Length: 204
Image (tube, rainbow, N blue to C red; front, side, top):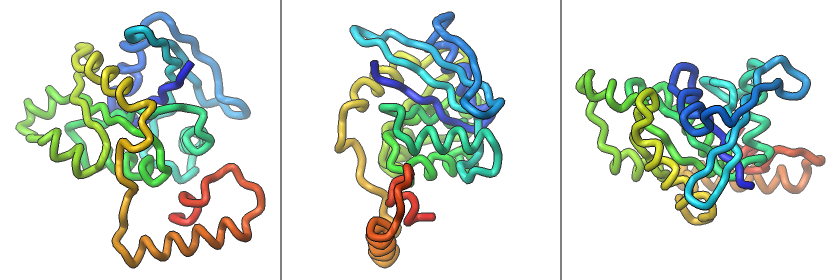
């Protein structure tokens, strides 16, 4: 069974999407070694069934709190097949910081642009196609509180989950790209065993 991980800022509607997807087919425990709540469930879409993990709400992945450590380590260990990054459409700038961190980890990401109705009510105009092209990943507008856009979201997840070429690697410009490759090669040459990818370590 393939696994979908939900990642997003606190109050982005992430857990609402989790509840819409899984309904009563979910259970709650704790992540190993910490008191952070772990929510797991299942969703059936078409002929396929997926495990769904609701990662702790977080603004970053720097490891400054238990929530950040749990989310970061889970993403880096690749225990999932795809990430639904839930983004608050009314506060794009703050939310897309986390999106950038996910892309730096080479995670496979689909964006659920949530609270899209509230953004419209506030006269926030978002060009979905332009945003998707700029970030390089699929973007699906959703209103989780009304279960709107969830079917479209799952359709995009199904189309993306097995694709290896669904986006271009992030470029920081020729100069920085070359430096990152140089540092990555040094890490590969000298590092001891680590569960963290060399590309991500080079960026740090």
